[in-house]
Length: 71
Image 1 (cartoon, one colour):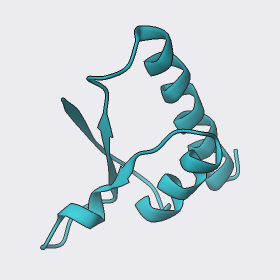
Image 2 (cartoon, rainbow, N blue to C red):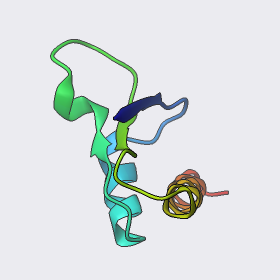
Image 3 (spheres, rainbow, N blue to C red):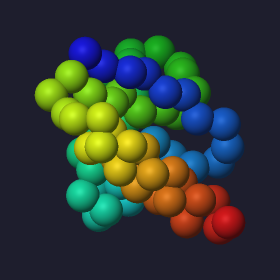
Image 4 (cartoon, one colour):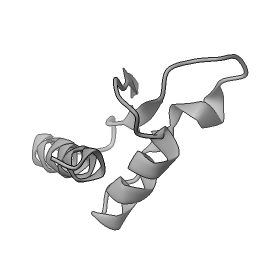
């Protein structure tokens, strides 16, 4: 199972995916899966993870997002 998340703001989804990977969380940039113009986003798989792993992953992606946005 996957979740598609779109982003508001000037951060490239490829940059956010790389920053998340630096924090140990692998997500796919939405741009890898789109052929037409689209907002930036992430494709996040969650089916093979525990609730704790999901919570930690979300926190890591959020921290990466804040760092890239300069907050």
